Length: 254
Ligand code: CIR
Image 1 (cartoon, rainbow, N blue to C red):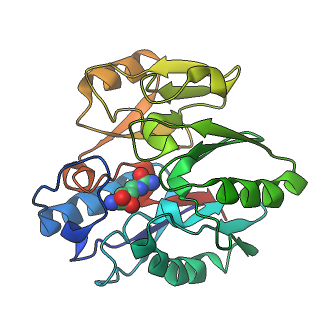
Image 2: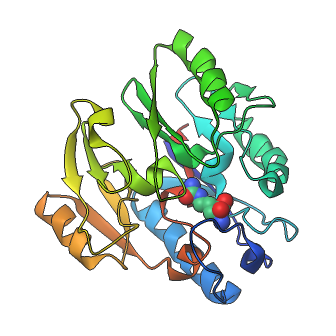
Image 3: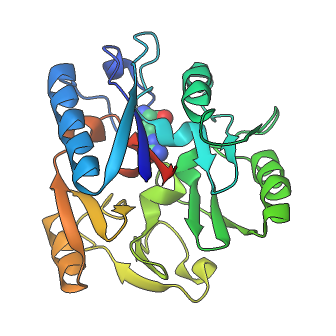
C-alpha cells in the first residue's frame, strides 16, 4: 500500500516564508481547491491519502515534505531552516509514528526535506539557505548504517535541491542545469527543463506516474516525449508561496 501524508492549507498562507519570489496576493480558497485536486491526483496514482489538519498559526504547514524524510526502515524528522516552520513538526511526527521508527536531527543542524533527493541507495542533499553542514553531517550519520551513500550538492538561485532536480525514473532525473552542476549527479540520466521555464524541474513521481504542474507546458512536452504518464495539476496559488508538487506530500510504502 502506498500512503501519502498531506496537510491542509493554513488560512495564514499569505504570510509564508519567501526567499526568491516577491510577495503576491494569495487566494487561500483557490489554494485549497488546488490542494484538493492535488490530493485527487495522488489517489489516482494509487495513494491512500492521510490529511493532517492545517494549523492556522503555521503559514507554510501545507509543505509537509520539508518536515521529514521517510525511508523504508525509518523516518527522520528534520529541523527546518526557517525558524517559523519548526512548529510544524509535532503533527507530522504524530502522523508518521504508526508507520516508521522515528529519528530526528538536532540543533545546530538545519535541513529541509525539499533539499533531499533519494535515488536508490544514493541520497543527494542540497547545501542551501535552509540546509547547513551540520544537517548534512547528522543525516549522513543516520543513513550510512542503513546502506545509503550521501552526496552534498551545491544549489544556486533556487530554494531547494528539488527545485533544481527531481527523480522521474529509477535512474533518470529532471534537471535545471542553471541551478545545479549536473556532474554532481554522477551517472544518472537527465532530461533538462525548457530554459524558458524556471521552476519546472520539480516533478512528483508516484509509481509509474508523474504529478506535474500545468504551468510548464514546454517541459511537460519533453517529459511526454520521454514516455512519462503525466497527471497534470494546477498549483498556481501554492507556487506563489514558493511551493511545488513534491513539497505537498510525504509518500511511502505502508
Ligand atoms: C518556504 O519558504 O519554506 C515555503 N514558503 C515553501 C516551501 C516549499 N517546500 C518545498 O518545495 N519542499
